[in-house]
Length: 128
Image 1: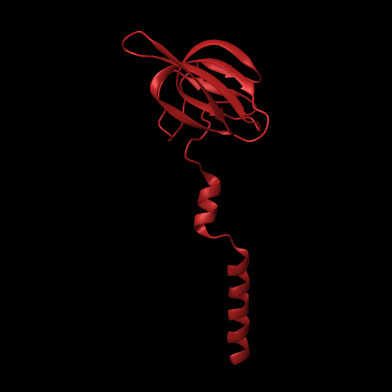
Image 2 (image 1 turned 120 degrees about the horizontal axis):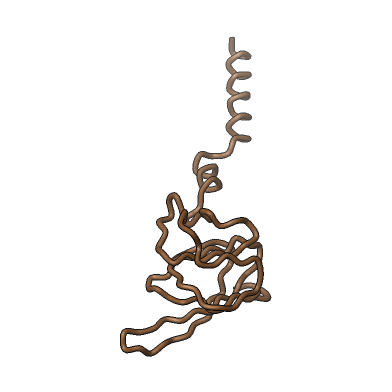
């Protein structure tokens, strides 16, 4: 009987040692800002704020698979490429003046807290 109990305990210990923890499995299955309808290999910008769950489902104002310049409204973005991207954007203040910014965006997404205009995407060499 003692041998049977030891064998069951050893089997359970082996199973627990090889199974991933619940928190590790959950963190791999979701992220704070999922890509929504942004296709893998592209950089997407949406003109609206997208709640992280279920992620953006509206039509993006920009979908780009490489370097780009132009002018699109932006409140949410997602870099679904394996590279860091420099995103140039501007904000027009209530007094009519405009400020220009550059943000290095690693893979992943986020929101702007104010409505901005994205004007350029370019590959960023090295880390952000």
